[in-house]
Image 1: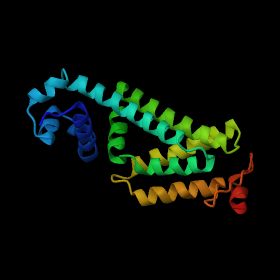
Image 2 (image 1 turned 120 degrees about the vertical axis):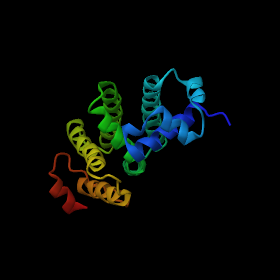
Image 3 (image 1 turned 60 degrees about the vertical axis):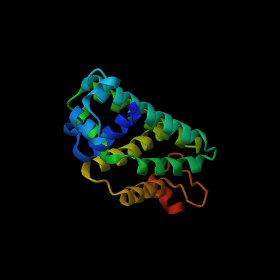
Length: 197
């Protein structure tokens, strides 16, 4: 059966997750999909062009999926819960490999920066929507993104349950109760917010 570009992109994510960027070769892609190099060349000029096309698809998919899911939720607190679930559910092993790749490749680094920037901006807006001022929302969003990125960097295989627990504690620390009520500090230190939850 003829393979589509999306088949190649999905295979690339799997290869990155399993073996890092060194595994992302034409030979490995074709072996994973059970096709010849002729199939690869029917879609892509070469491996470098494939890398760029893959990264474009990865960026667009992350941004589109995130925005689409967030736009479907009108309640501000539910949106923050949704963002936690999305963060837990990403392909962390593949993303970790992309982050490693970005350290030595400026083109990859730019794709990674844009994806992280969108994630952070969506989180900032979610915090603003529950009543946190813009400056504090940006600080808190950066902390949230740092939890995600840091977990990807220190764990070879991300423990999704542990990450979910970390992000749930982060929500609790911010004062967002799970019963649908928010305790907002408006500049009150996080320790004070925690006492009020």
